[in-house]
Length: 244
Image (tube, rainbow, N blue to C red):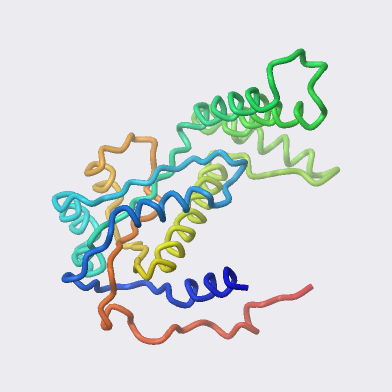
């Protein structure tokens, strides 16, 4: 019951804080711990196509504040975390999974692997390359057409285009972002996910590769009372809850 209560407290405590107390410092090691906890978030096929850039440098914080359009959540932040989608490293992740599974199951003739072990290995040796491989988006549409035809006869996975896989990767990164913010809330630290930002400038500041994408910029600190803009407003639950 204690853990459940702690989670509820963290959910209720977490707010998007727009103004931080500049006189109150935060511990970078605690922020780092919260990032480590964020890596435990669920993600598509456990591919972990993300990076977490922990910004503590005053110089880079100032540059990022400008790239975040000068909003107070950025200019008063003590630290920032930039969550980056790295769909371009899918081959490296596949190799890491195959290496891990081979070590876990042991090196042995194919016919000695159990059905479960064969499925796990083939998932990363065959299915993930099929899903993530693409050639200027063309292969994605071919895969989509195949799934559409297959779907006429049985349920079929259809999110196979380049744009679909981009959404999949960003959803996974978003889950990590929320896990990070709840972890910070459990430490009585505050955060604000900032949509208003020039992501191209952020990529240049952090020297990110061209194929990477900024998923979220999260400022961190300890709130000032005026940093929370009033009570939470939510649409009535009955209007958005559908039970079947």
